[in-house]
Image (cartoon, rainbow, N blue to C red):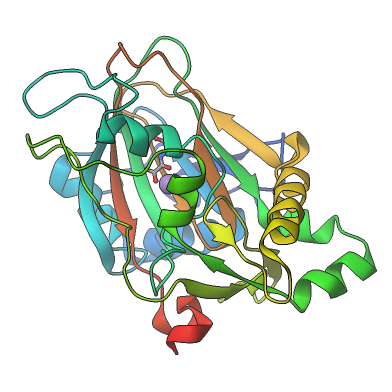
Length: 297
Ligand code: OGA
Ligand code: MN
């Protein structure tokens, strides 16, 4: 189904990951000087493979945002996802708001489903990498949908859930207490409007194929009691993120990726927070026509 592109025809080498139905490693490419033809190849490859990995690419700060704009307008520009404070201190106290945000990322999620417009994707790069842990994992929600039997498909297709960062951080005991006056802490995501309602099945706007839309921010499934919904979603998340549908990337400094947040969930694996880790995240905005919460239309 997929063509392995050859450097002889196009200015890049593409190798598909074999562990899962998504993900490709792209090498021998200059991401900042793409021809129109190569840009189109990267875009369609991304829509099909959902995760593109560019090892040892060392994007510059401006270069990362420039590359991200190939995929759409930015929800926010390159931002540090790090336990290393601006003043050089390492945030490691469990009561520290910076630590709580990072620990929250250990649960499977799609980004910005708690905002009126869900993110389209992200360009993410590694700057400081701990020796152990701190891998990023992705899980394929298209494969998860396809793995369900007909009656489960029918059931989930009729359901929606609210998404809220207050819910996910609150459930895990990670609500902020407002310290971190060094400006490191970023309260992004605590959206104060009505929680965003989203169907559990999303039709991917490019491929038109269905995938599950779940994760730690999703709660209060329509037509269910709160505890019934929590149990249902916990089980569904566990099923969906079965190992067979995941890939975990062991980072090297200078690696960059771009993922499709409409189809994939992601998470960070735990690491020793007395050691620094710094990643850079450029978030690509969703399309209001297809990523807007149904109660915000
Ligand atoms: C994020 C996120 C995971 C990681 O930045 O949105 O979930 O590996 N990061 O740091
Ligand atoms: Mn995230």
